[in-house]
Image (cartoon, rainbow, N blue to C red; front, side, top):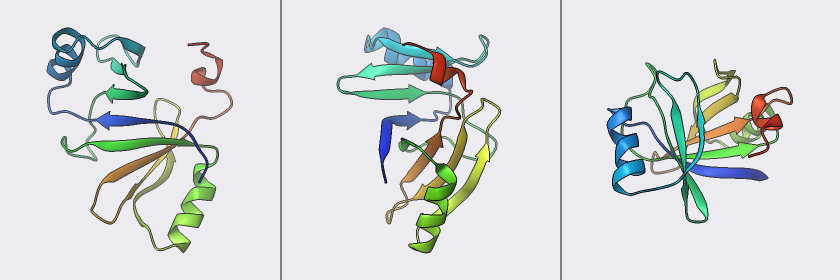
Length: 128
């Protein structure tokens, strides 16, 4: 798998509280803010890596850390991983924010989100 970028992904039970903690208490610098102004997701610089603290969804409970891995072709990775016997917890689909995402689990149940940024997505045009 060719990983283009990665980050640690937190889906906390109280997003605003967690964002305040990482921004104000720990003093982490914000790499980017995304989503609606009323419920933004934040990605913080974390040394050599990134930490995303953003909202949960009706499909997943808040809780443990997840890995976020950007790949070139999510559907090709889906086919390859299914053939290798990897547990796919959510097949590829285009999310409301425009990214194509799927989820798998490692042997211990750690959730790994594979993400493809389509050519027309704002992340492709954002110079940050």
